Length: 296
Ligand code: BG6
Image 1 (cartoon, rainbow, N blue to C red):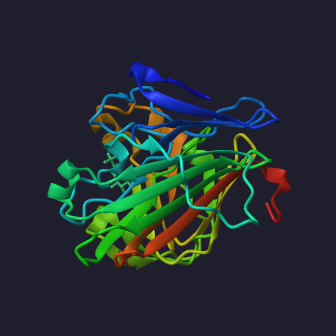
Image 2 (cartoon, rainbow, N blue to C red; image 1 turned 90 degrees about the horizontal axis):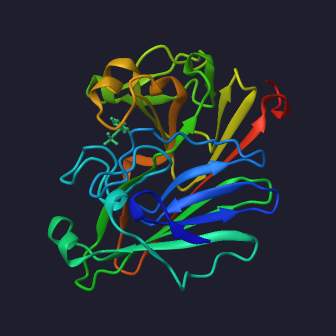
Image 3 (tube, protein in one colour; image 1 turned 180 degrees about the vertical axis):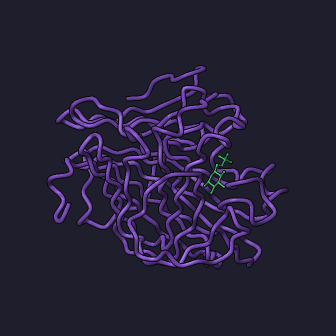
């Protein structure tokens, strides 16, 4: 279903037969809403989000490409999150074992303007799909279409903002003993000491080479988000906490209590593509009652 969203921006609504839904803005190729069959919102979207280009929409799942963070010559998190994507009428075939009933394919290509800031030609495809159980699956394919023989290198993240009831009651499992780069300490490398990951202050960490499955436990709501990923070795965990929240114009002062970013990403070892080569990455998230998860 195609319709107009905030400020007349184009959006697509996906609805699954049991009542789950997702909303995707063509601006940024950004998922802004993901609801379960009860109509409960599972993603965080700031009440102060502007929906006004060229600002990125604060919340949902912005796509960070071709640069995650501020390491590199581009603006923070690259430019894909503030470009107008198009519906892709002709996506490449997906493996026959992946059958999505409810999906939309989007594409972003280099514009002549962007070639001035990132001198490469590419096709960046995104499939947003709702699985039969309401899982939200994002699949990206990035192809180097340079005709001058040049390779390009990029980093990437699905900047996923989960809605949580109370951040102080949230625990993340799957990252306990890993190495991470701490963005709050000049990207110095540390190792988690095996304790459960809980939240008591600002956090901005890039966990390296993580397992493919990470769980986010919302104790208060007895709900667990399960994130699965492929082709994206790292995972970024971010919460601005009170002070940083106050300094962000498009983020409510107290909203940090209700959101946690956990993002499938490729940050430490950038991806290089030769002309004609394609990279594929995937993130799948599901929300289940906590009692269904083994050992919790
Ligand atoms: C996170 C970064 O991914 O995004 C943080 O690790 C950053 O350092 C945050 O503050 C938000 O970035 P932005 O550009 O959307 O304000």
